[in-house]
Length: 249
Image (cartoon, rainbow, N blue to C red; front, side):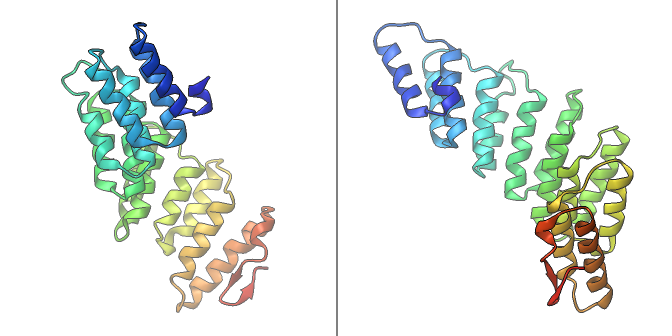
């Protein structure tokens, strides 16, 4: 109950009380406390529970480390997340897609696209198939990395198609945020052709990329076209959006 409710302090207290009263505490109990910490975003506490688990003489399983890594990743502590996962090597703990996705998500928050790509490669080397979640997070890392983001994102998108990984709207939105204005309409067309429904975030990211290129009249018209498409698609929240002082059609 504490785990599902994210009540990590109560969960930690109950774990401590059980140990002090001579009750046998197993890795599952520690994992429940880690999950409660994850639900609240308390990455330091999650890491401490993992340390306590090891000191108790129990062996952490893949869930223990992956949950801690995920909590750290969500908090932007990508280096800590990678360190926790690296400890799984040589400990006969099987690294799975979930664990590596947690590390890739940590890299996304920090804009560490090179590390994210390395983790995708490690997945393949382990005989595992990257999924759309991990690839989308890597695309997000490209978007946050600044210069050169589009080239890396485009290469990853091509690789996804080769591996029959269907990009979803999250993946396309991340690619749009990479900001190659000359490819935005093509990206939108590709989404629609593959049956992926653009959302408000898609259009907003594309229009913002066009706005960064203003000074070229064609970028203004491209942004207007995107807003018109958004309006036609029924995204009312974008109808009042303006481009260079003009309202969307």
